Amino acid sequence: MSEYGQVPEQIGVEALNVYCGVARIPVPVLFEGRGLDPARLDNLMMSQRSIGLPCEDPVTNAVNAARPIVEALTAEERASIELLVTSTESGVDLSKSVASYVHEHLGLGPRCRVLEVKQACYGATGVLQLAAGYLAGAVSPGARALVVATDVALVDARTEYAEPATGHGAAAVLLGDRPRVLTLDLGAFGLHSYETMDSARPTPQFDIADTDRSLFAYLDCFSRSFADYAERVADVDFVTTFDQLALHTPFAGLVRAAHRKMLREHAGRALDAEAVEADFQRRVAPSLTYPRLVGNLCSGSVYLALASLVEHADLTEPARVGLYSYGSGCASEFFSGTVDAGSRAALAPLGIGARLAARGELTFEEYAQLLKENLRVLVPEAHREIDVARYDEYLDRVPDRPPMLVLTGIENFHRRYTWR
Image 1 (tube, rainbow, N blue to C red):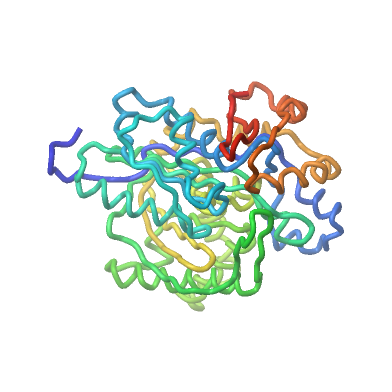
Image 2 (cartoon, rainbow, N blue to C red):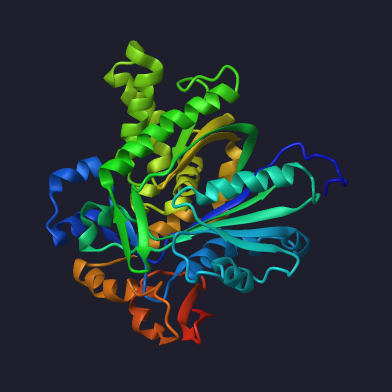
């Protein structure tokens, strides 16, 4: 533990885990079931999509993502978590935070700041940076922060091509002064934010999106947030400074387009189409392996991409990662950090890839049957009972799964959970 007032030498991600449910549907199956144009599959670049069950909600997703991280800590390390923040656009109450439930079911101590933030798919990154500054300032030496990005999907046939791209789950990020996964480049960041109505969730049952506006905002904010980064950090080159890139991934095809646009802006005619593709495969494709199997995790998306990068990139040498976070509405940030072979060793015990492979596969008919109940998950109700046993057939499809927190009902607006 650091001495009082002693500034830590480094701050970053000590542990990272994602929970992406126990069920999935192949994206081509969803396309066929909805009668969507199969020619657009290649542009989407998605192969599977995680599907939530009616006994899952933002609380269960967050707890199931963070629990393996918390359980791996010593009692002293667990007590050092002084800040717990959930980032979500799937809040369950206009006052009480999702984090209050998460704090309870993770068994964290009472000496902890507990709160929730919201800024579409950017929220978790904003909190991560604020928490990193707090920890780097040694205001509370040896403290840690746990940031959990958690969301559920409220998409159906009304959302057309957004339906196959929208994921389900949570990403948990533990920050501290012993970063085993990602060491942050403190002070190296770029920002770009403004108000726009490209996406919103005006009711607890429905998302709306201006798709074209959102895509252009994502691309524009990437360029402008990186430009701000380059003004703050000396001698930065988009092509040569970053060994790997991890971007917010609404769908993998958008990330490919964003990479191509940035190379045109920063490499000009120096790179032909073959060189652009080679750069994409080397610096970007490793980060897309998991997102292509899950879908958009909202503010957890960039951290799912980071986990994918760590487990699939060539990290025989330390590598600098450029990360881009975008949230509709909108806010964006480009920041950076370093990873190495130790990062992969830190993620290995969590078995993220194996858990994604173990999800049970749904038919389109099964998926459609779950949708009606899934769309109720955020609706405020005084009383509700959920017969979890109805979903045992889906839960039991996952071999050797660990206990998971599930929603059992609501009593006087108070959500109730149990381990299953």
